[in-house]
Image 1 (tube, rainbow, N blue to C red):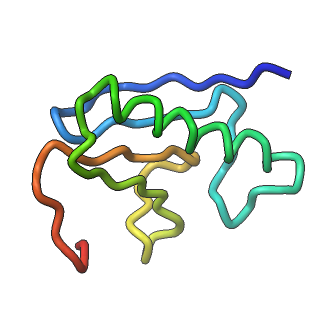
Image 2: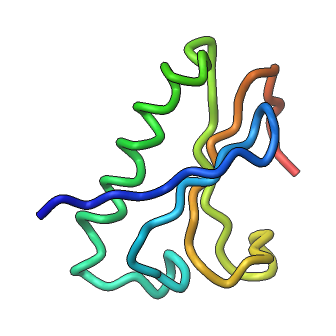
Length: 89
């Protein structure tokens, strides 16, 4: 089965990777979502080169209000293009 996602640029350092088949949030993912979730991470890996983020990047999934989730569907943020600090937030 070919899985795919779309990505949306919302700034130089933040891309959203969104599955075509909706998943509410990672805490509500089910076993059949395993392949989709892995595929989203590999899409992130592929976008790193395309966006010239080889120096470093971060993949982020927010889950729940305490986790910073503001949009009620799973998506992965690909962050990069600048020095990222730790801890985040």
